[in-house]
Image (tube, rainbow, N blue to C red; front, side):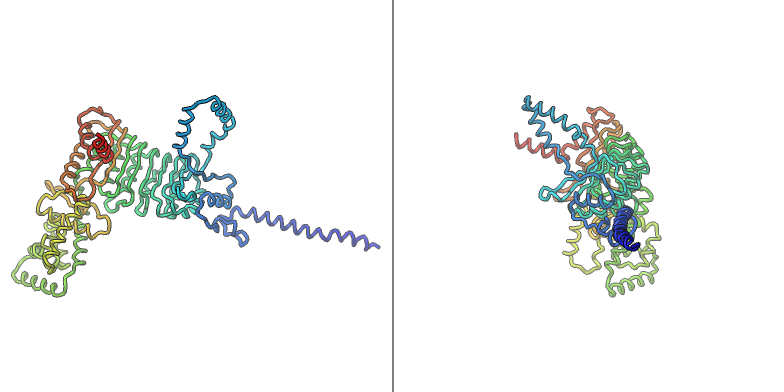
Length: 559
């Protein structure tokens, strides 16, 4: 009998271990949910793979991908992806409402103002505004983030969802609290994006280390960069100038650079001017609303007209010319029979007792391409010969093609096409026979180069023992609005504009290439707008401005 009550007593207890097991399973699931949070740093378990952000396959729809990745990363409150509002539509609506102000409209606006009190602050909520293609509403082409701090975790999410946007063209970050660390993370994200991404705008993000120059590295694909309102000082301008160009490297992708509303002074403007000396890709530059005075203005104006090469630049130019000459000789190596002829000629000269220097000069006049490598080294050691090479190119003469047994028609065609290539690159004016020979040679180097030749290989002019390079005629747009330039700085720009106008007039109509400045803004500076220097600059620039020229043509046709 004692066993009978124990049986029913134990029978209801038998499911309790099962219940404990089920509750234990529940607690284990809870533990797993708790362990899912650090899954981004630790390798996930087999059952957690579907919820791991690393395993999510982006669909190319930014709104869906960003929300899913934020949830998988543990975000509970994250910015929403919204379409950027277009102000033109709002302006049209407000204009129509202002034309017919009825009492019903006033009552409706009063009620709406009470009900939409919170909607007024929607603009300040963290959002990711996007512009989409008209044909495809899901294809994002521009991203705008403004007014909320961009952290490393958000950038990590962007590194996963932005590469799937095949039509992305621009990223705009306005006052997002960037630091030097997050900027490095952002720069590492850019190569992962589509090749269509060409525009980056970082405005209102001052950095202590002024590391904006990292956006202009040699491997950068950015074409349009805006760095307005970032408190960039002279040190930051120095780093940016070095990123534009140095003696050995030059940025070849950046087309426009906006440095407006910063703290750049004369020293910083000088660094930017140094970067423009050897840069041949930048077309648009804005230094508006800075602290540039006459000293910095004269530095910028000096780059736009022929400027003197420094000793270091002259040495580098000679090295490049000798290197290119050696490459040309190796690529146009003569046949074995010609080698034998050149050896017999050298033996004849040596038996006649001719010195090594005359041996160098003689082949230069007759057949430079046949000179052997050992003789070329002797030319490098001779100071006089190096100086001669600088004036007439790396050892070439107008008759350098004759030893190749080519007919006269082919040689004539080569001589015709060479000056066309020279004009297409915007080179200077021929000044003499020796200068003509150097222009012909360096134009051949332009033809044989891939896309862009080192500016140090451009034809130069020798005056009073100094070497002058043609000014930068690639820059088309220069904005110096609202600085501290006086009439002293205007004189420098007047000289530069007069030189560029004179060069453009001497060009033939069929020639192509850079024309120099087409738009120059010097308004709102420390000089009288009616001063004669400023008036002359405006008169010279007026025919060069394509927009104003088109307006004048339309007005002429209308009258």
